[in-house]
Length: 416
Image (cartoon, rainbow, N blue to C red; front, side, top):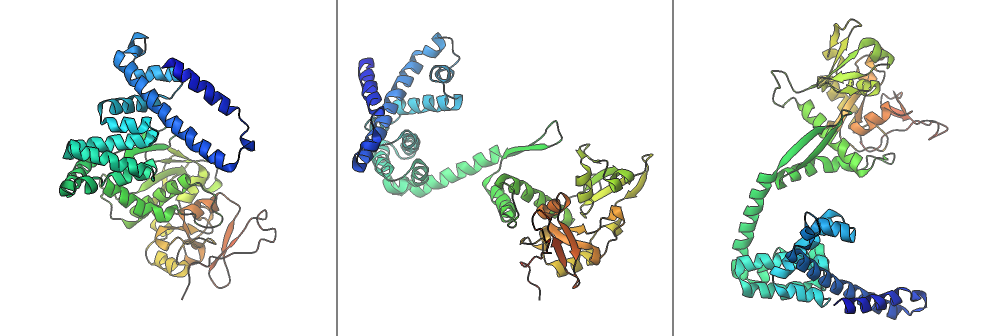
C-alpha cells in the first residue's frame, strides 16, 4: 500500500508542476474532474487507515488520549475536524459497505458520504436491509446532481421512494422525536462579561425560533442609506427594539410588586453637564451619552440624585412623552422621522429635541419620533434636528456630509 501511494504521490507532484496555462480548456476541465475524483478516492483510503489505526489503539500506545487528539498532532488538524474523520471512518466501516465503495470509486464526496451514511443507517433501522440498499442506490444517484446540503434536505423524505408504506408513520415519529429533543435541549444562558456587557448563548426550539425571527427580521434590515451597521449589529439593535416595545406595552408581569422597567441612577450635575455616567439597577455602569439617550425613553425611569446622594427626581411623569402627547406625536411623524428610515411608530422612542436636562420642555414642539438606531445615531453624531415652519421635523446633516447643510426630511411616511 505504501509503495502504491508513494507512486501516486509522485505522479500528482508531477502534475502540480505542469503548466496549466498551456492546456486547452477541455483538457483543464477533464483534469479537474479527474483530480477531484482522485481526492475522494484518497479520502476513502484515509478513512480506512484511520479506522484501522483507531481499532488497534495506536493513539493510546503512542501516548495520546484519543485517536482524534493523535490525528490533530500527526496531521495538524483541528480537534473537531479530526473527530469528524474518526466518526465517519467508523460509520463507513460498520454501516452499509456500499457507501464506502461509492466513495472509493469516486462517485460521491466525503461530505456526501456522511449524509448518505446517516440516511442509510436511519432507513436500516426504520425499514430494514432491503430498503437500506434501495436508499443507497437512490442517494448515490442524487449525489451526482446535488451538493451535500441539498442532499441532506432531500434525504429526509427518502422513505417516500424506498418504503412508501411506512413513510408517513416514520416521518411522524421523526417529527415527534425532534420535538421532544428540541423541548429537552432548549435553553438560554446570560453571561455577564467583566466590562458589564452580556453574552447570550442558547438553543431555541422551532416555535420560539420562529417567533424571534418574526420579531427581529423586519427590524434587522438596513434602516436607510446611512445605515453602516453590520448584520450582527442590526440584529443586536433589533433585539433591543423588541425589548423596548415589550416594556412600553406595560403588560409584562410585575417584578417585586413594581412594573417592569429600567432604573438609571445618576447625579444631576453629571447629567446636565454630561460629565458623569449612570448606574443601572443591576449595578452595571453606563456612559453619560447613554444616560442622556435613555432619559428620552418612557420605559426608563431616571433616578436623579443631589450631590449628597438624596433623590431629586424619580421619573417625573411630566417628563415622559406618553399618553395623548405620544399619540399626537405618532399622528404627526407616523414613524421614525430620520431621513430614509421606514421604521413604524411602534418601534420608535420619543426624543426631546432640546434635552429636558438642558431645560427643554415636554411638548409636541420639542419632540420627534426616532427608531432605536437613529436615536443612538443622533446622540452620537453631528446631525441636528429641528421643527420646520410647517411644524414637521427636519434634520440638518453635518458639514462633512453636506457642506451646504441643506435640511432633509423623511418621505417614507406619507401623510394624509
